[in-house]
Image (cartoon, rainbow, N blue to C red; front, side):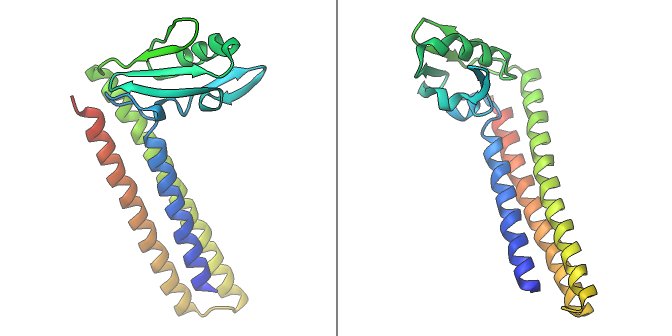
Length: 185
């Protein structure tokens, strides 16, 4: 029973790390990436819809994104959503598609993006720690119910803590890489 708890905790922690890495792709660096627009929600016929479900997003070069809405009537809504987002990009609308020139980041904007990356990393670490807390609680329950001995529970808790430390270190490593990418001129 303890092994099942540990393998479940390991799988859930791994998913948290992967989710954090995926969120890092939406943090802007000096290069164009379609993942920058993953967080943009468009008010489309009264409901918030992810931009990538309303339009195709292409990257013609390193400093440009092109958004082509499937429904041309949504062009204004898409443009408004991009302007209201925290990306700091001014869209250029030609009536059929929206061009997003990616300007070079200023030093202040780079620091802001690093803060955003730190916030995402902290959310990932909190998720991993919550999994640890839940697993520790479950092991204590097993001990109280008599399904596991005190020594087995102690060893399992040590393994859970080791798993937690490993996954937090993975998030820290991903954060360090993202910081270097953001601060790169």
